[in-house]
Length: 501
Ligand code: MV4
Image 1 (cartoon, rainbow, N blue to C red):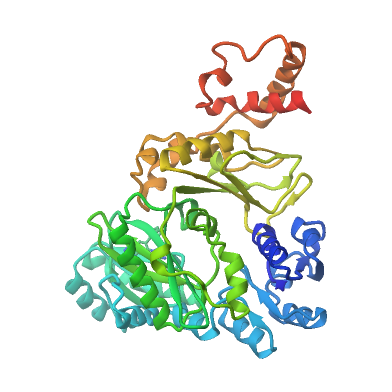
Image 2: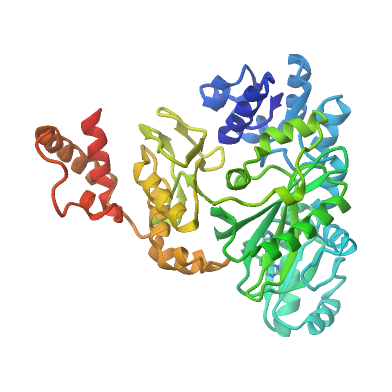
């Protein structure tokens, strides 16, 4: 198996390969020569310089490398080449197996208007709107009158929020259409824009599907992904507080029908909007393994990456739909090298010290280690911290505990932001929707103590702890004694670890 990716997902695939007895081949850029995914794979092939365009996006070089080392298959991970129809086709044409859906299914879901047509034909509910590109502003106005304002203009070639415009009134429509078309042409080289009714205040709930080459297509329930900012998810969970077993069965059947209509195989995800009344609407299908797949793994007990490989090898799925029910609760926090106190500005530097949480119900899917250099060449996601517990309340408490155990020194991270979310009353009540985070970001991303002062406090505390070791067990009234519910306890955690090193 050649793994055409880097970071945590490359490591995740290496691990699945090793458990299945499949030899793994990493690819890497010059910047990643010492990266964990390179060291952990059985073999590794240098692609080129650090920029993705000269390394991880070089489909030709990756296929040539696979042929040179005698690989049978290529796993694309997520991002990079994972949803490029031409790459899936080129892999197949080279006599290799693409671990993912057929190129035709990627193409069918790549156009949002084509995906809507497929979904409608399959009986999957979609947001009211058009299924072909708007010709002009007059047509847009007529369609908008029909569905009622507000409406949303979307790029047919889009996805992930690019080329979208909310329109509240008729007199804004023609300007917004021109802007959306311009943005779509620049981003996708295709200015086709269509219109949907704008759904206000929904949740983003997605359904995992898994299909084999023998006609079985299953759904593995939902993930709640509403905690996002600028279309970047920050926290995901499974199941969703808003989904009953009855709704899960209906959304699951809708996702399976859409996937079948696209000729889908392997792992995929159907994205839905779920409104406050429990109505759901298909948005688009992600034709790859997703970042947040672990929460589904933890509540279903099904190893998605392992099954991706087994499906690609021609195995039959041995499960029946009725046996797949979520057990307990899983939450994932994306640990990114971004400074929440500074508008989530990407942070760079060397990871000087890394302490990874462990203990009951804790999983760390990471791509970094002490010494890793964080650059601006790649995505800022360093790792995912995932927890499982019997119910949502315990999962939140467990995530909070695990985040307190996490120390990353050397770059700014989203860790403290996640601690505040776990402490937030609305989040704890499950009262989240897609605008929730933007609304609350100011309080959740407030600045913390400057790095230098935290380090000084840690050193001072370490010296005190060393002096007091064996004589005292946590001073009464200290942050450590307050039950660990405070994020200002950061220096105490640091100090404890300093003292133990
Ligand atoms: C919508 C919508 C409201 N109404 N469509 C954003 C990205 C793309 N996947 C579709 N998106 C949306 N489509 C209608 N008709 C709101 C969003 C949306 C959104 C969706 C999922 C997760 C986060 C989001 C953030 C803002 C807007």
